[in-house]
Length: 467
Ligand code: C5P
Ligand code: C5P
Ligand code: ZN
Image (tube, rainbow, N blue to C red):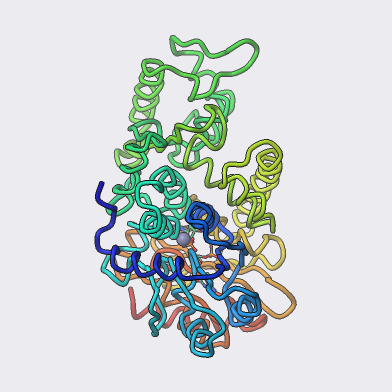
C-alpha cells in the first residue's frame, strides 16, 4: 500500500529518522480534540517503534511554554497540532542546542524553517480542510511504522472531524486518503447517513429535538413535536422501557425516518440548501462498542474536547490510547459539564447579543465563559440566528488578571471572499502587544487586558483590506 499524502512523504521520512535517532522524545501537543488525537497517534507510534517518550499538553505554545519544554531532560521535542506558528522561538532553542525539534502540524507556519517540519501548507496541501494535526501525526506514524500504523487512521479522522474540516458534510482531499486506509484496516466505516449529532448516544426524540444543524419547524427545539413526528412513523420506538437510538435502527428503519424528515422539512419551507445538510458522510469507528460516544467520530471528538479543555488532558489521552473503564467514565462525567457550559455560554451570548460593526461582530464574556471554550461558543453563535452570517465573529474571555483570550470564527463563504482570520489575529494582536494565529476560518489570540477596543480597531482595519 502506498502511503497517503504523497506530497508529504519526504518530510515525513526525515521526521521519522530524527525520531529514531533520539535518545528520548518529549511529545508536546495541543489541548483540543485534534491535539489529543494527534498525541494519541504519535505516542502509540513512538511506543511501537520502541522510542522512549513522555507526553505533555499545552493550551498555548508561547515563549514561556517552549522554554519549559527545553528545561526537560529530552534531546528531542516532537510538537503535534502546534509548533509551526511558533517556529521563531523553537528554532532559537534548536540553535542553542536545547533540543532537536520535530514538528507535525497544520497551522500557518511563521517566517522561519527547521529541518524536521511536516506541515501540509509547506507543500500546497490545504491545512484547514485537507489535513488536521492528527492527520499530520498519522502521516508521520506511517513513515515510522509502515502499515503497522493503519489502525491509527480512525483517530486521525476523529481529529479532522473535531477540527471541523468537513466540506459540505464530508472529508475531502488528503483526509479521504487517510479515511480510506482506516476502512481498509477495518477500523472505520463511512456511509451516507443522517448528519445529526448524537446518533450513537441520544434517544431518538432528543436526537431530532436538539439538532441545531438544520432547523425543522415542529421538530427542532420541540420535544413534543419530535415525539409526535416519530409516533407518526411505522416504527418500533422503544426497546424494553427505553427509547431506541439511531444506532439501534436497521437500514430500512433509518430510511423511513430520513425520508419522512426530508419530506417534513421541504413541506415546511426549509431551503433546499439546508435540506441537503440533513444527510452527510458519517464516520463510524467499527472497533468501538456500538451506542457509545467512541463509535462516532463527531461524538468522540466532543468527548475529547470535554477533557483537555478542562485541564484533564490525561483523561482524553488515556481514551485515545485505548484505555476504557475508569478514564471513559471520567470523560463522560466531564462531557456532561462541557455540554452544560456550552449551552449556558450560548444562551448568554443570545441574551446579551453581539455588537455588530462594519466587517465584524463581537462579544466580551469576561469570566462568564471559560476561555478554553469561548471559541466553540463563538462558532455555535455564528451558526445560530443570534448573529449575522455575513461577517466573522470575535469572542473575548478573560484568561487571567493580565490577559484576555480572543477566538475568531468565520465561514467558508467568507474565506472564499478573502477572509484570513489567521492573518487578522496575528497582525491585530501584535499591534497591541499580544500574539495569535491559526487558520483562515478559525483563529485565536491572547491580548493584554484593557486593550480589547484597540485590538478591535486593528481587526477592523485588517478585515477592511481582506473583504
Ligand atoms: O488548533 P486546531 O487547529 O486544532 O483548532 C482548530 C479549531 O478551529 C478547532 O477548535 C475547530 O473546532 C475550529 N474550527 C471552527 N470552524 C471551522 C473550522 C475550524 O470552529 N470551520
Ligand atoms: O482557541 P481557539 O479555539 O479560538 O483557536 C482557534 C485556532 O487558532 C486553533 O487552531 C488555535 O491553535 C489557533 N490559535 C493560535 N494562536 C493563539 C490562539 C489560537 O494559533 N494565540
Ligand atoms: Zn488542529
